[in-house]
Length: 421
Image (cartoon, rainbow, N blue to C red; front, top):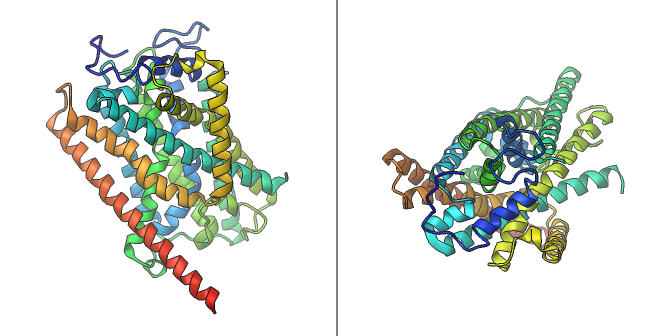
């Protein structure tokens, strides 16, 4: 895969070649690398599209309607499109600068040494913990309300379920329009409902999280017989996912208006007030809960590999050590369940995780790799775009974090005044 020349930095054994062996054994067991699989199937762009799309479309879609409620339809749609373009540019940088680096961590190590690889491991693990905690919160919420193969095929089913959810949302929206219970979404923000114009920036991290999949680019690329097909697969996936996000956001806002919750699935219950048959509400909730169940292992793989690289550098591949594999899996799952119980709000997780870990993985690190340009292949326009990505990421994230902190302080003060009355 890539050029035959070895990179100047080979990370550590666990962050470089051994982590790739673990990735291929755990994530893509039917493939030994870019060669054709032994099972007789052939890696294809379509399979990569399903895998990338599954990495992209996760729990973030549930907060898109709430982000659209804050921003208005037109700015939110523009932000979704802009985030997709930047995600495509960032993954393009990663693929172009790979040149033999077998993983994102090895690529960071190539540019910034062992500290760079370790820093990426930390950020990927932290981002995965936040995202999978959201998954558990949503799935648990669905279960509570109802009462106590090959990767590319499960990915295809997962994306199909996301599309099913979108179509069900469309059907419910049409039904609500005929019943007269739908609310026409605002095209622009309602500043009278905001404590400050800077509050608009709190929706940005939600969109950033929704397009953070960069840590799975290299494993998915390894499944293709032609590595050059990965760029096309990413572009197709981003267009598909942006369309799904925009549609779900619009239909969710059309149905629930200003009552749209941070987790729009919570609106699909008997108290939604939309006059929609409960069977449709149940179908919407179940379809997306099943989608998250199928996506969960893909993200858990990334979490487990990155934590293993941090805690057990230089050890044999995780797939070859059953005791370490089982122990690490059990501990990580326990941590995720504990966090899901302790942090019930997915909006809070998205705001802080998106403004820190996700934006760093998806924009800052790829931009920094291009600016570092250890191989001397970056063009002037690449460096200009990379610098722009980093500046946008730092400025918007700083404003979002400051706004979130101020809102938290304001809410506590307000709560204290109400309690003293």
